[in-house]
Amino acid sequence: MSKAAKKVLDEARESGNPEIELQDKQIAKIEDLPGLLTMEHITRLTLSHNRLSSLPPAIAHLTNLEILNLYNNHLVELPVAISSLNKLRILNVGMNRLDTLPRGFGSFPVLEVLDFSYNNISEETLPGNFFMLESLRALYMADNDFEILSPEIKNFKNLQILVLRDNDLVDLPREVGELHRLRELHLQSNRLQVLPPEISYLDLQGSKSCFRIDGNHLIQMLADQLLLGISHVIDIMKTPTYKFTYERHQKSNSQYPPKNLEAKDRKISRVKSQLA
Image (tube, rainbow, N blue to C red; front, side, top):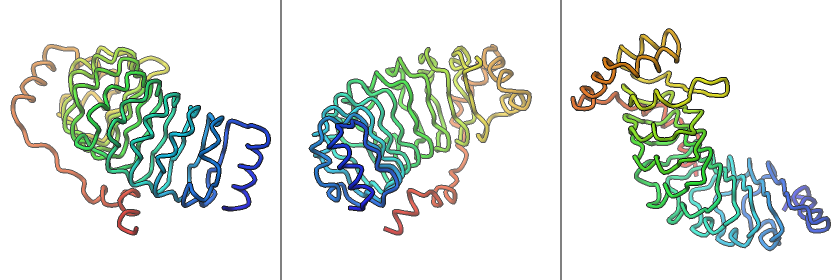
């Protein structure tokens, strides 16, 4: 354990500080931080920008944890026990090497913000109860391997931010239009050709809203309107002409645009895996 990390832990024990910041300390194993997992008073634990390759099941001992930041480590999996952190509100496991999320992951009762951007997760590797995370307000899934999004996304009734950029999405379910609290929808750099008309009725044009669809393979009708601005895209999606075009496209079984495999192979999450 580095002197800097030891100092942080010693001070937390002495003062009872519930927030522990251990980012960028070259930590390779939680076991290198003796006593950390017995500090049940901790509410915030930051371990971002380290070299952790695993997280012990004993993380569940931190029963008062509300915020856990593991961004930019070398994690290849998460323990099943992590979902027993019943007070966890914010979880950031972005920029790791995760191919899947553990069984039972959808059991967090009060999780509001989940970020697993920059990993290798797909619709096939989500746990069965993932869409039971009904308390979510923000979901960051950018730069993973999703080709489709489950219609069960409609369960996230409290969702305000949904980030799906830089995946392989070829289709978006109509049920996204049921996320009535959504204010940010990021879909850029996927393989989308059309968008469900239901999206056009969401409040995505306000001063605090954001709707991004650039970098896709949009049909000409949408591409032309995007040149004029996103509001024009939303307007045309409400028209009978577009709705007819959308339905025809969905029934046509048209070929999907190809994946950008070269870009995927350059991903940090994959390059690290190959070097490991």
